[in-house]
Image (tube, rainbow, N blue to C red; front, side, top):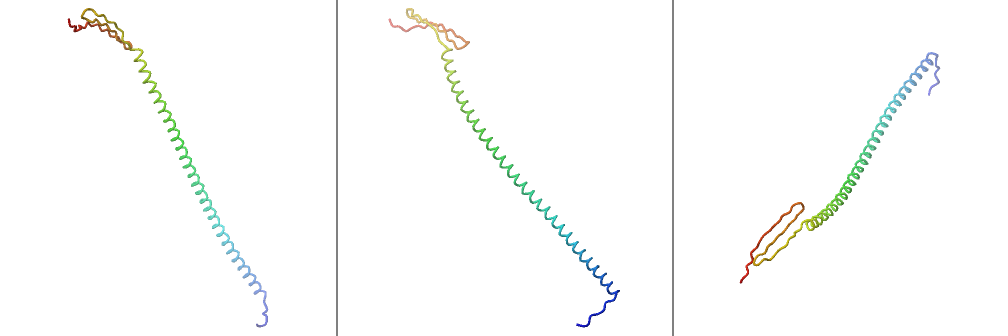
Length: 147
């Protein structure tokens, strides 16, 4: 290594300017790198937010589908129970109607009459009543009597 060189004022000023310029370039490079890193970080955060929103949306959609399925199932069970009750009531109503009609036919419809035997004839008078309709039958029936 040789002897130290003397630095003049112009050289010193040139070195100062070069150092300042290198520092400026380094700072500018670091600034650009920091800005690019910031841009990448912002983009990544936006992607994470979108991903989180998508997950929330899928979870909400899944929840809504489950709730809809539960509501549908409950409505089917309610409908089945109401239909079962309706069928029981309908069956009971039909049984009551059958017995009521049988009772009405037995009590409303009636046959009254009397008969008289005269020598070889049977005089028959019948009154058949079914509700508002009435029918009277009067007949003389000859009896086959051997003498």
